[in-house]
Amino acid sequence: MQTNQLSWARNQALLTVREQPCKTEKELLQSNPAQKVILKFIEKLKNDQSRLLQILPDDLANQPAPTITERIHPVLIDLLESPLTKVGPKSELGERILQHRGKFHQFIEKLYDYWREYTRFLVKWTGYGSSEEGTRPYLQFNRELDELTELVRSAYRSIAENITNSHPIVYRQVSAGFEVGLAVDKKEFQYPDYLRKQFGQVPVIEQVTIEPPFVIDPPMNKRTGRFQETNRNPLKNAEINPHNWLCYPAKVGDLRIDVFFHQEFLDLGASLANLFELATGEDLKSSPDAIYAYGIDPSKMKDYGGLPTVFFQDEENDLLYGALPREDRFGYFGYVKKMMLTLHNVIAMKRGRLPLHGAMTRIFFKDMDPVSIAILGGSGAGKSETLEAFRVIAEDSIQEMEIICDDMGSLGIDKDGRIQGYGTETGAFVRLDDLQKGYAFSQLDRSIFMSPQRTNARALMPVAPIEKVLEGVPIDYLFYANNYEEVDSEHPTVERVSTPERALSIFSEGARMSKGTTTEKGLSHTYFANPFGPPQFKETHDQLADEFFDQFFSDGIFVGQLRTRLGVSGMEKEGPEKAAKDLLKLIRG
Image (cartoon, rainbow, N blue to C red; front, side, top):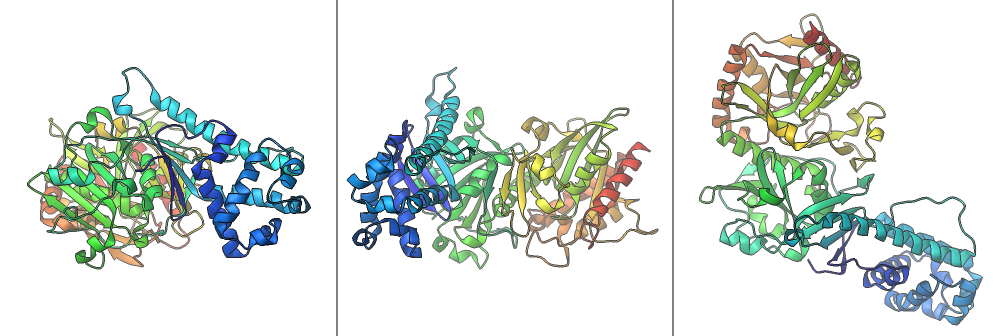
């Protein structure tokens, strides 16, 4: 990435630096990035034929935006320290600026708002990898972000007060600098030679600092289709310009997946920090398990069909690769997350683990032994909603609920032959509509909100430390989340299944009523409610499922259906609540 450069992608502004770009208000206004913001704002005013341009002399208002910027820029710098009555008449704007004091104040307000309407990122080359042991450069990085925010705010206030000759009575400490800071450095990864040549110069993220609430509005709000295996390596001929890419090395369960993303998808790539632990230090010294390139030039992916969401097994180098093109239709966080989980699941199955598309939690009661519950089901099946309702309903009887996974995990067998459950994510990607009333606001200071004004609005929030995700817990209850059937005497909320064969039939059918989280509509069926790996490797998964389900029953694990009714009209809240109540009754006997 080029340093000390401000670039734009969609509604995003990205500043890349090696040192703190400025330390005073004057340095801030004199900087090249500040001039770029002013120029871009004036271009918008001219395009909109804004009445705010009336503050300019007629001959200047008709000039191109760069000329106007060149004339107005020094006036803004002078206004940092001197009142408009002193600055205006001496400037090229002349006495006219005094006649339009109100409009000039509006100009400053609109310029300030224009900057803040962008999703703003600061990427700083830090050299953490070469830092002396015992030093804490990440603290300095955070301080610099805070100082930049204060500089932007104070510069705006200084100019506004010198225009109006007054000051506000109420001050609002709004986000004015950068909402996300990414500390990056160059890394020497253990990649095959051709990948090292293509990806080796891409900056690697070492630290993420987010100023909440962080709200983004990516191009899409739904995901469609599946990720398919291809027999051609999509990374082989990918052309990667390191100035436009970043790498987030993620811990996905006990795997490492290096995610390379184009700056067009910067908001989505940076949001990974709320879902997957960032791999650092010793974790980076070995080879990754998979590599995912999100945002490849579409022309390089045109031969992969109408939906080029593909992955490839590099048997020679024992690596798995995922790739998606840089198109707006793939600008949704589900494409980031689910490809990563697909890669995880393929590797998990190779290693003898059974992927589980569901929620898993360990519940510690005040007066009985802890229990672990796994609820398998597709998107919108009511898994997380039921467990959240359980947390509220059982509040008086539980000490703690440890989340092992919120969406995807795996089941393995430990050295003593016991089935253990493992997670993949340290965060949760949840529908705002399905959360308990007020819960999203209680998490405002930790969450990333995505398209809150649209259908399938989401919140991305941290929920579990990586240690809990990885430690493994015994499974006591395994349910299929049935979100479409009504409850009656023959279809209870909680139904135990008596045989492995019957259980396999229910779980493998993967029936689900769509909740608008994908482009599917109505009742759909997905093999084991998990389109992320199992259907693509059905033979391998069938064998693993037979073995695990036989052991579920031989070990006495409760296997059954949980009717959440989340997909039944009018039961979106009551359904999960009733499921939670009956689940609590079952556990407590």
